[in-house]
Length: 48
Image (cartoon, rainbow, N blue to C red; front, side, top):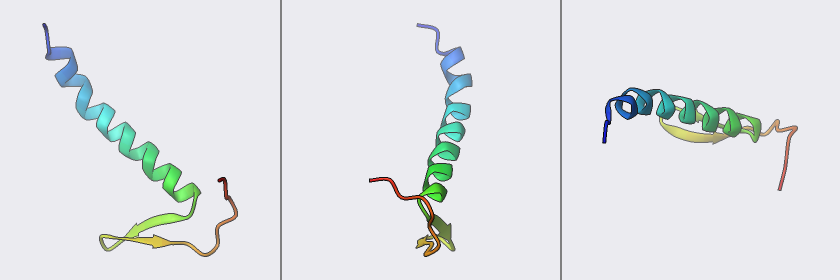
């Protein structure tokens, strides 16, 4: 199995995944500050 394409794809896929999770967290009012999770009290979006 040729793993060259996977090795080239995996780092970018990881960065894209982290960016998507971070954007979603910001949508629901979560943020990271100084290594800890902060909850924003001014959330206008809530989906349960």
